[in-house]
Amino acid sequence: MPLTIRSDLGFCLDRRFGLVFALTSQFKKSPRHGATHARGGGTVAGAGVVADNLGLRGPRGWAFRGVDLAAEPGSLIAVAGPSGSGRTCLLLALTGRMRPTEGTAAVDGLRLPRQMSAVRRISALAHVPGVTDLDPALTVGEHLRERALLQRRFGDSVRSLLRPRAQRAAESRLRVDAALEAAGLDREALPKGSRTAVRDLERLEALRLSVALALIARPRLLGVDDTDLKLSDAERGEIWALLRSLAEAGTTVVAVCSEAPQDAVTVSTAAPVDGAEGAEGTGTDADAEAGADADAQAQPDADADAAVSGDDPKEAPDAHPATGRA
Image 1 (cartoon, rainbow, N blue to C red):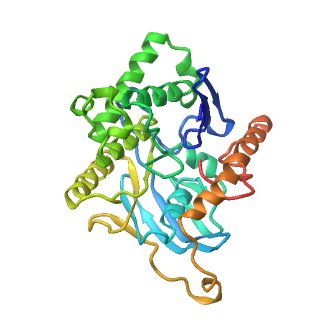
Image 2: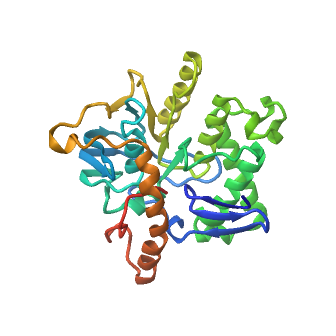
Image 3: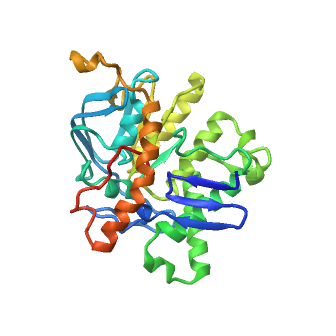
């Protein structure tokens, strides 16, 4: 299709005419709560994550319930459980993409669900089906240029747009190179270098590319879905080493997996839901897709109203009528 909607970045890209439209809800403001904002290949401090009896109920019952979590900034958090146990829903909830219906949570002091918009501005997602899907027809270089362009135009501060174009382009290249290095993806090692199509990448290489694209925004909280899906034991070891290195560098990482490493802060979604409500059934990760589309459409209007009124998203409650993702 010529028109591609990338809800993870909050933009619509029409490749026929090269037009880019930014969604109001995704304009990033300067990070707060002690974030260290760096240029080029700099680092950003991680965000602490806490949750108390967090739960989310979807159209088919509880996706997850009774989640308790306390993780320091720069932690590696593993959301473990079988497929269909609400792992993706929890990941999207902790990154401000889905509205929890029970309990409380906070990311770097930003309360959920009250300040979902602010949480989205300091977080990024990678390898989430239906949210951050790579285009198999595009090359690695095209994905990187596209993400860098959108980050430079819509993700950075207004002040950065006033700098000379050459300076902004140089900083963008540094940011891309730093993201690739952090993700462990060597373009020169690919079959055709940056011209390698996504369809020709190995599964581990595609996962690294998705992580690199997310890191271009220098998020304080990184969410990665299906971390160990269809990977060999050796490949799982490599990806956990990658995520561990990102956490050690300061970024808080939340990774969905079937089996968590011993050194991670582990949250399990495999526990059965008790009581009559639990008899209705536990929601699957597919509930994320059902609820997310509704919120993705409602989100721009809600944030636009807040922008017109001058309300600070940190102070005003989110006006999302439905659950959803970025």
